[in-house]
Length: 121
Image (tube, rainbow, N blue to C red; front, side, top):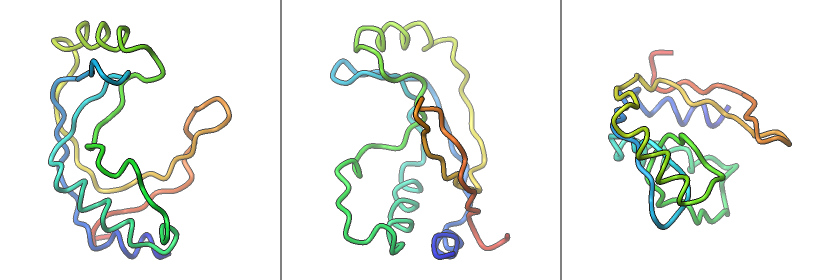
């Protein structure tokens, strides 16, 4: 499969997450993740696949993150973030794969496939 072949060129990497954040401009609570450069590389490589050809991506510049809460008000986002900021875990994990997930009618994500990173697979 084309996407799997492209992802073989991206070596696995460690992802770090620290304090949750929320914005006074947009609703939602998320963990920023790093290193951002590795996620940018990953997006660049995967968008080389023919399935993405000819599509414009208006959200390309959104920094990588892990969503904690969404579909709520800005006020609720700020309240939840304030409640979590000193209690939420911090840490890291090894990113050696991408999961292809699609939301169903109730917005629960269902796994459709797994793509492994790197050449050691």
